[in-house]
Each structure stands twice: as C-alpha cells, then as structure tokens.
Length: 162
Figure 1 (cartoon, one colour):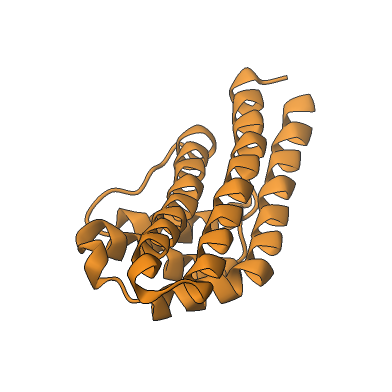
Figure 2: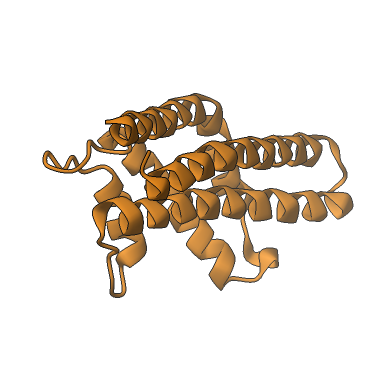
C-alpha cells in the first residue's frame, strides 16, 4: 500500500469524526440561542460562529492535503480558498475523480464566506440570521458531503491496493 495515501485516508476518516463533534456543538449552541435571554444569548451566538468556522476550516485542511498529496497542486493567490473548493469539485480523469460534487461545492462556498466573515469582523457584528441559514442546511448537506469524502477515502484505498 502506498504510504502517502494511507496517511491521507486515515486523516480523512479521523477528521470526519471531529467534524461530527463540531457540528453537534454548533447545533447545541444554536438550540441554546433559541431559549436564552438576550443577555445570555451572545455567548451562544459566539460559540456557534466559532464552531461553524471550525467546520469549514477542518474541511479546508482536508482539501489542502488532497491538493498537495494527490493533485500535486495547491491554488495560490488572493482567491485560493475559493479555487481550492472548485478544484475538489473537478474530475481529473487521469488522476482522480471529483472529491465533492458541484452542488456541495456551492453550499461549501456559503460556509467559506461565513468563515471569512468570522475572521474579519468583531463577534458583536455577527448576525444570527446568517448562522440560522447555515444551520438549517447542515443536516441535509453534511450527510451528503460526508458520504462523498468517505467515497474518496475508499477510492484512495482501492488505488493503494493496486
């Protein structure tokens, strides 16, 4: 088995478990936002924002590893974050299938933009409306994305066994 792929396969599978926990924490925090007083609510909003940030960041770390280790090509420049997601949605017939679907790439772009917002504004300026939209699509989006990432890990495993 090719060792470089084995490490990547394990990283993908382990990261998915961590992402599950981040999602659960974001959802729990959001449930608390709905039932707490306005004074207490801000701490939960901050927590949700941080966990949504962590969710996207974890995925981006995986995409960077795939870009480096499988594609041998990591985007550069001012919009490299967006291009990385686009790269993961591309099928490279001679080297690998698309890691994620075009549909999931579009949804991920919403999470990427939110992560950018969290990084560049004070939490007092975050609006819960944007978080609400992301949290509403997460239960539908995440199982599809998780399945795609597991399928890619399985593809790498089969490739390594050849």
